[in-house]
Length: 142
Image 1 (cartoon, rainbow, N blue to C red):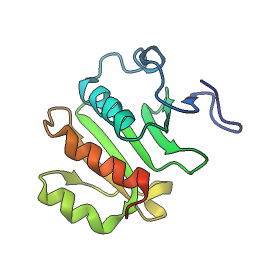
Image 2: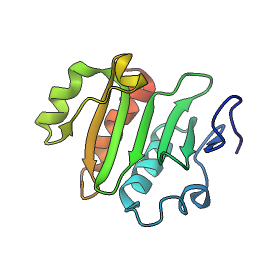
Image 3: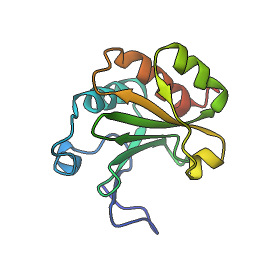
């Protein structure tokens, strides 16, 4: 567990693998964490060399592999997760067809063409679909 140079003091990262639950659990006290916990475990099994960071202030997890750039962010919110993916916005319609809401966020990632603002309720049952999209972004399949 290290901090990247020139990063916020709120960002804690694992160079490879996932952070220990103790790193983020306290910051997310009062939030539902079962969905994000399931997603994290499935991501690790699908992409063993995945690296993870957590921002204790903004309450998001970030993911990348090796020396690659960040490819996905999962923001934990009271009503659900907001996911930003390093894939084209043209896939918003596919997520909407699957029953999800997508509201583009005009953050740095959104301005560079990422699919941002994917809303995933904590009650979502199809964790595999969520992980499938995250893995596609991680592998650069789009």
